[in-house]
Image 1 (tube, rainbow, N blue to C red):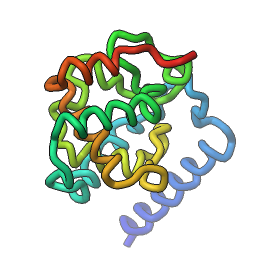
Image 2 (image 1 turned 30 degrees about the vertical axis):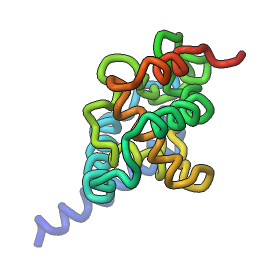
Image 3 (image 1 turned 180 degrees about the horizontal axis):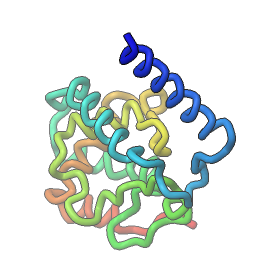
Length: 170
């Protein structure tokens, strides 16, 4: 009985301390602040589990030149301001975000992610990252086009790749 009482008391104290940490303004909230201990690990764990459970297993459209070109146009308008363009410096918006948005044209980008995973992230967004949900502003086809394009950046035709290398308008 003493063990149960001690366990419950410890949980209550931890809850009060956790609430106080946030309520008294000790939690880092500025984008330049370091993450809270375990924040990154827990967020990645939760995201991975939800995406593996809920992401579509197959693309709803074909990976074609036409869809890649449409995806590149959509990416330039909706995604490049945060995720960047090949060979271009990060935008001021991307530099100020926390956590930093992945630069999808550096390294492998998301070419090793299943297109359904990228689609899920485009459609639903990711809480507390700045990644918005596009399921209210883009059609399902448009979300698949941009998802397939970024999943296949290593296979794009020269014309589609060239359209992505043009700098964004200032």
